[in-house]
Amino acid sequence: MKKRVALLLCLLLLLSVFAGCGPKEPGDVQLGEDKMTEYGFKDFNGKTINYLCETNSKSTVDPETGTGSMWNDYIIDHMHKVETDMNLQFNFEAEQGGNMVKKLQAMAMSGTNEADIVLGDGQSLISLYPTGIFADINDLEAIDLSNTDKFGQPSIRAFAEYQGKLYSLYQVGNITWPGAPFNVFNAVLINDTLVEDLSLDHPVEMYEQGTWTFNTFKNYIQSATNADPTNYVYGLDATWFGHAILPQSALYANGCPPVIEDAQGKYTFGYASTAAAHALEWAREIYAMTENVANNADNHSSSSYFASNNATLFLGHSYFLTTEGSDIQQNIEKVSFVTFPYGEDVEYGSISTSFYDTPNATSIVRNGDEQDTAIVLDHILDPMIGTENGEYEDYLKTYFFPDYNSSFDIYTEAGKNASYEYTAQLSNVINDINDALTGITKGERSVTEAITSITNRVNAEIDTQFN
Image (cartoon, rainbow, N blue to C red):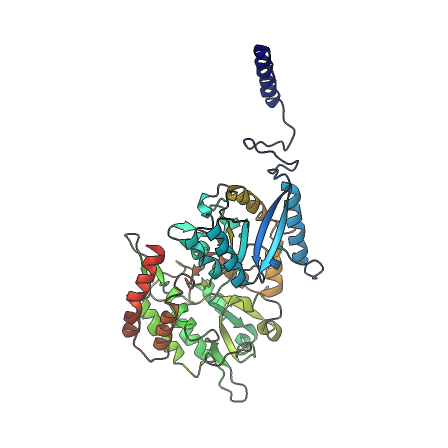
């Protein structure tokens, strides 16, 4: 009897093998033993994917219906499509930033990591990297970081690197996700009407001609100043974000980010070089041009000189340009974008002169299901219907950028290749760095004195984070 049963089992096994070798229907894809849905994606058998979001970030992936935004409707439809394609359901939970961090900390300590995907302020997520709660993106088989059209260049993932691992993706994860345009912190915005009124060369044209440099910039803001006392127009509104943004911008534009890697692979402070000293001296000279450079760093508000049509150029965050309802969008009819000019110690066009502050970020929780979660996230980040042919980029270009020059293309290139500011990783010494830069810019301390006074502390922090 046992032999008959064994023989029958063998026969059934052979039949199942032969059946598996037969012709497959279109879309009948097999991934090992994974069951596939009729749409060709892995079948998650109704599983719930828990999406923990910071309150201010939740609408990026789970917007409310009826908000009047076409892109929100696209996102809603896309997330429903992912649920259908993969036979799963999303559970979106929103927490205030501090509460979200506490919740994730508690998960890490208890080992009960019920969240799957986390979306929130990158600075908050970075603080959790040492706990080990997040999966290393490099270890997730479904995430192909070589697909830079989808996940972006390595430079915009630098914020998420910790001790040789990568724990987050930039913003939602797909760099062209609607509603999450690039953060270019040191954008130079241009009041095109004032440029025309003053009969100036346009900075976008100068950028394209290879003449947008430290030297020409200094001369430009002088020419872009209108000293008419009844309607004074500064050449540059440069300190809305504080006294440090001008020297920071000069440092990046001269090839000197705050963290650099030497020939031996060791990371060190990037502001302690000859090129950095040149950039800082130049920034101090620009700042001292008080007739040409508006200084509202000590008393800034949402209204800048630029937004009031009293400055030809503005140095600040690109979101003032790419956000509906900003003072700049409301008050200035014609605005263009260009990057910060190139420094004297770098070959023109050899680097991106732009940098970005810590963005929103997406992480995958290490809970035993992270490889499956990565499969889901990868599909979430596929182009959604209605945006797969670049419609969202076309919308940005049409709505926020002029059609008479290539400033949108410059913005896109700058955003894709911007360098990271390292604010979160250097949080213990960032105030020391900014104080040193401010002292230099305002002429209160020499470059050598200010940088030397903080180099050891900054290098010690860099060692902790990167070496």
